[in-house]
Image (cartoon, rainbow, N blue to C red; front, side, top):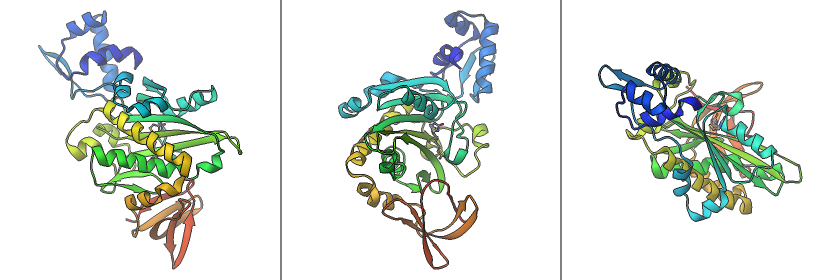
Length: 325
Ligand code: BTN
């Protein structure tokens, strides 16, 4: 992908460019341009070719840019986010930051990629991550305390993401325990929080979020659950740089409060966002499936389900919640 970036930068305006102009700008032959275009199409990018006019992206792309994101952060967030790395392609932004953490990487380092070749979801699932059309963003955050004190962090990050998306996409956003972001029952965004550290501290979290912004149909077909994206909800393609800044802004805001007060400071807000409370659900456990009525979360963030008149509590981790068909 890296070698195709110059071509993409030219095409990202959504206008027509002839093969000749593209070749001149890139300093390569027209045949080489054609080869690169073919490779980009293989990555899922829709590129129109019209005789006599040249090549055009099906829609303009605002490529991710460190300065654009940084410029849209408040002063207080800038102080907490010393570094933003943007890559055309990575295996996974979470994996990258975990390696960065192991090399003494600074707390507050953010990482984004235009494409993830091995994007990871919860419970070992794949996160579908085609080029240039969605947001794949991770943030490294260090804590003085041990991993045990981070119980509930993934729910709190769900609150932050819901805040950002409610303010900039739709009021109709809800959360499905522990932290799927839904719009009218369809998945709009997912969160993968990975925690490591010493039992008595320090510890760190890599907070990864994937937001479907404008998922190409072909990529969407490979997602094994109902999903949506911002373009389908609003009819508009938002600036992904602005969206990244909004999300980082909300992340730093909740992380500051979480460090001081933990999950209790967010319980009421999580419960207001709960899209499943009162609904009949199925819980997929490692050893089987149970059905019951979702009853929200307890004060530790565990999911409560009424199963045959017994209220049972399930801690996050190995369970997956589905709406009953
Ligand atoms: C889920 O299964 O709902 C969690 C999806 C998390 C996806 C994001 S995309 C950025 C970061 N890098 C990854 O490999 N995964 C997370």
